[in-house]
Image (cartoon, rainbow, N blue to C red):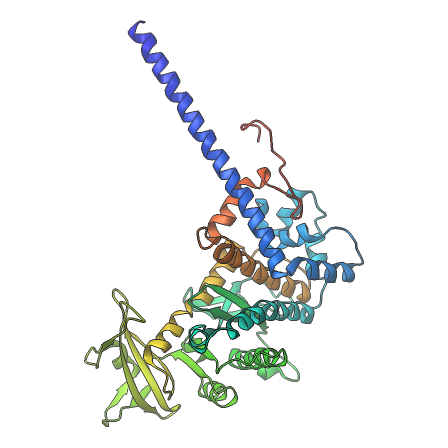
Length: 441
């Protein structure tokens, strides 16, 4: 065999190996997409979402057609390779007005009640499972209530819901819809369950209008969810509520302490003034910058040093302050009304606050919540509540069913790019390209 023939054969074999490897990778990705769709279907069944919601919407629409796949499409347009609901209709061959009809099928009160009911349906079995354990196990099984608000970008005067709000994420004023969310974080982030949601009106008018601020919304949502759990026979221990500095209101903190015997933990501001027991007057910026504090370390919060101080505030009264120093992070402090709770326990609760930010990032970027244009207020509530439910289903799929081996981003990415090869009758995925040549697919 000549040298040229040998070289040509070698290159041909190399190209064949590359094609085989590419085909193997494609087959592996298709299998992963199929597994992700089956896991999502299992999560929907476990959470009890499809049957109740489909029946309720069918009753409102007086339609007996199969709606589960369409509702899931409203929850996860990326699952079908789309970004918006209207692009979804074009790809799937549905009526372009279908999103508006489905999202506006229920009034906003029904959408919010549906979200609250879903939260109770998830939390109550978890609590009853923990209540059967020993006292030591129950003390470690902590529920942390986390509250925050976020701005979903929108433009125009859409139904009076769009206003100008300060966005902490982008550090500027944005035009959009401001939503207030209350979630429960189970353990160290094993599961994050949205339990209530509200949209703030930019210029409230009429009776009750001045009560639309986010501090009042958090108080109302927390009171309502704790009362609902009690009516279901769930006697929770005093709640630990965490929030950022925007929620550091003395009336709200005292309400949580008196009405629920709970603890409201917030990040302190640099402008706050405190009097220490030794007579010194310090400002919040001193707590954020100086390092001459009685630092401690604990195995419960590894890699973190902290200093616990008792102080008196002219606004809050007696408070407990925890100064936190972490490697490669700016020093900060958190505070609550005076409590005997240990500093490591407070810090562990504070670290769970970031999970609500994770929910907002998922809603905005992974599920494209801002990509919605409908013509009724009820439909906007339906859009946001369905995406919140989708966020819970994704979280449950990745953390509970997939045991943390697959992230939410990997699930959506896999289904977004390989939805044509997935066969799932309930979600109306028909494996459109199954058995078709790779280039044709």
